[in-house]
Image (cartoon, rainbow, N blue to C red):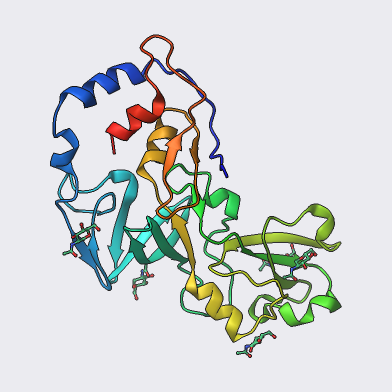
Length: 260
Ligand SMILES: *[C@@H]1O[C@H](CO)[C@@H](O)[C@H](O)[C@H]1NC(C)=O
Ligand SMILES: *[C@@H]1O[C@H](CO)[C@@H](O)[C@H](O)[C@H]1NC(C)=O
Ligand SMILES: *[C@@H]1O[C@H](CO)[C@@H](O)[C@H](O)[C@H]1NC(C)=O
Ligand SMILES: *[C@@H]1O[C@H](CO)[C@@H](O)[C@H](O)[C@H]1NC(C)=O
Ligand SMILES: *[C@@H]1O[C@H](CO)[C@@H](O)[C@H](O)[C@H]1NC(C)=O
């Protein structure tokens, strides 16, 4: 199975100098990697590619920077703010939760993030679970959805419901006089229509898992898509290989393997 992560190829020429550079400076990466370990609250051993804001230069990678606020690690991602609940360096995943949903209280996410938006970014090319909550705002009550009403968001003339799905809802699936106002990925699938109860709030407070990939980030930096070839963990992402540099024969996978 292959997954695509956007972006069009621009030019492969810039790869040539980079390739030479990485190839002929032995230990270039070894010097920078995995020497630093920071901690913030429960999250100990924050190490490459992650770094904490304020860590010495050369620790981790600035594209994977977290901040530590109120003893909690925060990931700023696509305009949202997420508490980091854990990082797995074996599986190459990060568990995050939207700051507004983290405490299991009724409300909307701080920032709407659909599954497709979550994975457009080369740093985080995939989710583990493809399931999301859709918050739908309606100008009239929808009797079939009574159980999934979000009580704290009801106005005199508006009613908000939560719906779970494995993709963005199609227009025809959204009841008349309703619109989707927010989305957020979730950590587990549930085919049933969840009522909006404590169990749902707990599910939302669990957050969701993103896969992180330095290789895929590198591909994006060079305007290449990234793909994975097998479902093994950790999932290994590589640049799309259909494009080769005709002048030096440099194959993008071999280039980026050097920079890992
Ligand atoms: C921290 O995590 C890194 C990456 O997994 C690992 O190599 C290192 O041994 C860990 N250090 C400690 C003190 O746990
Ligand atoms: C940190 O705590 C302060 C005071 O309690 C609060 O206003 C702020 O929103 C918190 N920041 C985060 C990121 O949770
Ligand atoms: C739902 O839509 C109504 C009408 O546009 C708006 O007044 C209300 O603020 C919306 N509710 C939320 C939670 O966004
Ligand atoms: C969410 O809404 C879609 C479209 O109305 C519906 O097909 C689906 O069953 C709903 N999801 C759940 C979990 O109820
Ligand atoms: C929430 O609803 C689900 C589905 O009906 C149910 O299995 C679960 O026990 C409920 N949770 C609570 C805390 O009532």
